[in-house]
Image (cartoon, rainbow, N blue to C red; front, top):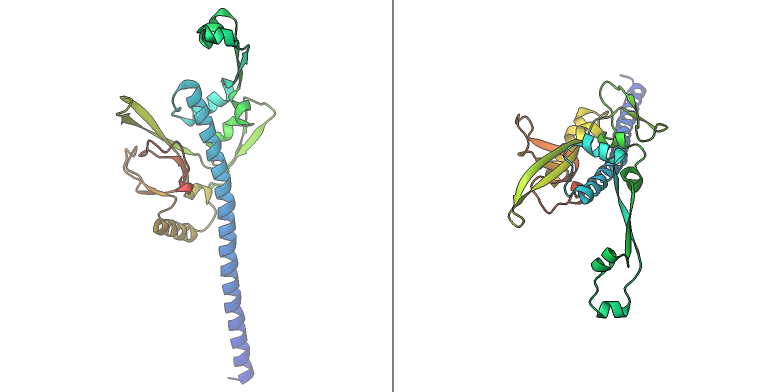
Length: 250
């Protein structure tokens, strides 16, 4: 074979190998960037759900157990924004033993409770979108539009997966009552949808090694079809002290 032809073939192979390496590196960088962008959006939505759950608990004394009920609360309920107090006890009144509670009863001090809608307090413009993961895409690429019943001018296009809310009752020996523990989850397969199965598989393997963003499912798993779970979540079905913290902080 002509030496010139051999050198040309070697040059082409070298160029091809260099391009393959470049493309592989570029693809990895793009994947990492997209992962960071998508996870940021999911975390923000999960924190919105957390704030809504905390406001519900502040209003009714416990977490609400379904996302549809949480959305209904955000759209249609009012919550305490502030308590305004008018009037003060004088030194003489305090020395005489008059309490604020009695002063309120007598009309010396007046307390007014200010209520606002839950959506206004939380700053949520489209409560109906709370149940949907804000990024990723489903395999069929379908979408639909949700018109908020809270604000008819606010329309939200939905084409993503849904968050999963799981709950579990655990006996509290201190209070002799049952605590309702919650987890709200976004599956990695949903918010990273669109990338190759190989990349998703490798990402799960990396997370497993680091023991991050994963959980062994052993509660609320009636059909026993799920083993390891990967993704972002708030709450913990096994930890009463969690208080809806995100698993990205672990």
